[in-house]
Image 1: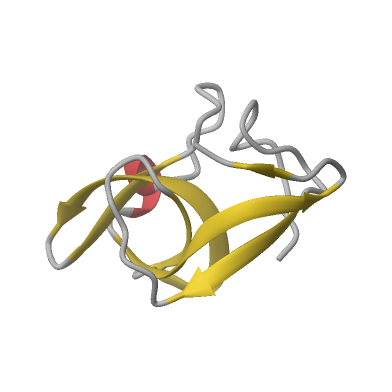
Image 2: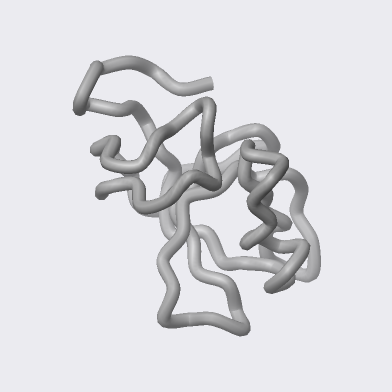
Length: 93
């Protein structure tokens, strides 16, 4: 999956390529791929903050971009990001 936009800066940047494990267990603090319930057409990469209403409250790392659960509510997680493989490989925290 490719990152699109600045919402996860500084952890991830536009154009980063990620390996995602579908259905992987999620803990608070994990970076995940998800869909907001009110925007099922939108696939997002965000940080899982807490479980809420049988879904997850997600937030981006960039404090200046708030296109996350603060705008769209809870999301359903599709998978957990394992690592970035391009442009510079590395594990994510």
